[in-house]
Length: 289
Image (cartoon, rainbow, N blue to C red; front, side, top):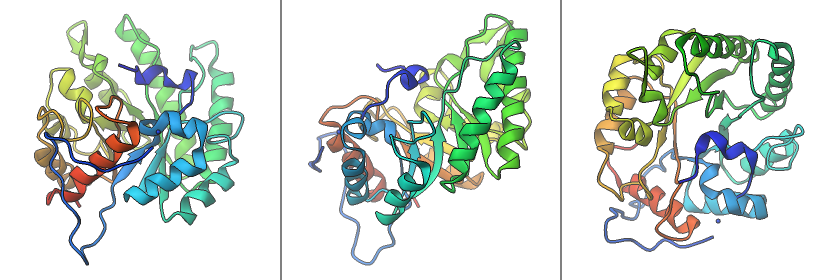
């Protein structure tokens, strides 16, 4: 399985269909029913985005997706386009940008100044899109709690920069964050050692489950820290039966989530087919707004 912490080393992104698999639940949206604001993490279409970003954006719009989270930034460009151009392309297709994933340079105390300069430029570029969240999908893996504390101080510093530009910095988890250092769950340590005003967490519900915990329990435990969710499954959304998406959405709405994004990392079909099936599953679910 592709490791989401490492995906910034390459940027790539997928084509067509909407047939229903035996394990999927889907149905057409009734005529006149309001379109749901279903979001998509564009990493789901990584190969197609690398080949034809504009055409792939249109496919996402045609599928019905409403909001997007990006996964490509370099040399001041998003998917090879200036931020203003990329934003216009998205808006012209009737979608909106609300979040991005950014790796950033490797951080140490010694590289602090240079890393902060990188973030200042990234924040300046992404502020031009109107998005509200800048999410880091991984961290330098610690062996000790004091090493992790250094990384959380770094997160707090970036969070102050994003807040000054009207955005919020956040972190996207995998399953590794649910291991322990000195009997402390890493994820809890991260939440408890970051400033809630400036640092949020984008919960990937699948990786919480793979880490051995309940996404619903974590939302209830820290109700003010999760404005964003990644809706993910083994492959297509609803395919595995491993996650109770009804409880996840109901709890998410109860704590006031701002947005959620489908992310498909593995596929039973061509990626665009899998991404369409995931949309169809959520569009048909009466618990999804």
